[in-house]
Image (cartoon, rainbow, N blue to C red; front, side, top):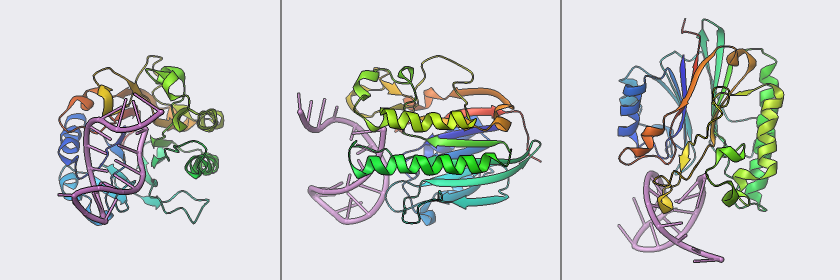
Length: 262
DNA sequence: ATGCCCAAATGCTTTGGA
């Protein structure tokens, strides 16, 4: 079971890249973020033509998440609980039937939080608290869970080419990193870090030649519950996608779990 | 110290991104 997360930075602007990548990489389940589309305008026909079921949680102009899956959805839930006033489309959860039982996959787009010291940073930390509460609740089910998405958190110095330039940024604040670490303390495993200690990035800014200088950061993560981590076979970052024409500023990150559709 | 670049809608400039 190949599961990927990709902040696509506008699904309508990126549909050709998305179709090419789906054909190349053949993922079973794909978590997309920043689709920047309302549900009605999501290019679902092109994706369904490749054999995927499509569930979206979009909004006008920005944010928006989706899950594409070769497996039928048993359940779909949108929105992270804990704040009814939060109208940002940043969370969608799907449940699938597999040889390892019910598999729960979340596509999340965690708030950026910049600038620090504003209500945007408070919103980020509040969102992370809600995510921790959700994760704690779901862990009690003892199911394989993949909590995948753009976390907008640089977990460790090795996860940035130049960590020093991020010290005043919301992505690298002690509070952001601590809140991310809470998921590990709960029992979640960082899929990429479980297989390698090397410096890997998932985002390179469009500006200032960041890609050419490999000035990247690793902020897209696949966090695995114990029951999912037990089935982890491989994990990787599909860096080559950043070199394509008209790329997203993020690339897909992928885990492979030893389970199959039933 | 600031902006570089990009997508979408607010639409030929602004907003949000990171």
